[in-house]
Length: 400
Image (cartoon, rainbow, N blue to C red):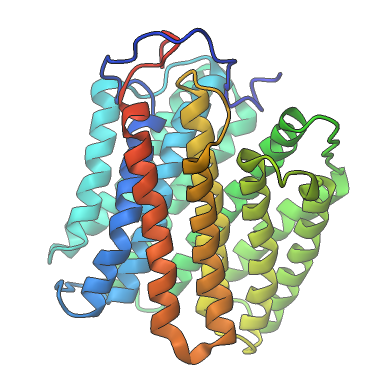
């Protein structure tokens, strides 16, 4: 298998004692653990802010919620994944030990500073994190001349620019650029990362995990799927008219629906580690359709946004956090009732928030509460279940 596509899921070896502390052995370990804990706590924190129990400093509670779910939770998972995949793509070392610990501290500092009055410090630290991750990834990529993955470095730097622009809007230094545009541009970049990595690994995982399946990729569909997301990013940066946004989103929805169809999602129902990725990708199609409707004023924008953030991003990250954690610690790539609970709870969170809000628009607080409980419970269970997995050495005695 090509190193470009590999996410290094070696066959599990004979089990060995795994008592040795190994949290800083590879990027996925601390960042998946931190991300899951933060995901579980962030919704209760937001509710506390919304209810007035937690002080809001230089941003509104809704702004904090969007900022932290994108530039806090999601970026932590992206950092952990790329530091882990980068080592397999290149054969070079990615941050470990004290350096990885420093990356984690930088991320934690960003989470704390947005709850304080120190707006300038919060801006600098939060913008620095994705740029630092870009540098940490660029070093092994350049050393190995792995040019095809250089674009991840550019995307991380762009995310740094997006979070900085968002903070500058709050500081009153970028009045012409709405904070919502920064958040949307950041979400577009994450959508592109999911589209790229999903196209690389979902067909492979489907074919490897389900005998007789022939998940395929069509060159024209691939070009339209990825190109349409980039077009949407460009339109959002340029603050394009609503009709342009809607048209691009509908074309993208068709392209991604065709892409998903070629991967044969109907064959995955009995394999949770695979269907969770297909379900998450299906939410991309839902999001793009709803985004078009929202752009035309036919639907509330938050409903579309949560199809992406909870359904697609939440579903894809929880699926990859389980798969990566198991594969990179020498464990079998199997999901038991605990993993199934994570996956189902995230799907329930998305369904309640998106379709509950659509069917019963007057029940906003109930849908937010129900969705939030499912989301927080899913990631709390992940943190409890995978704390020993992520913090202890591989059971097969291998490094990483």
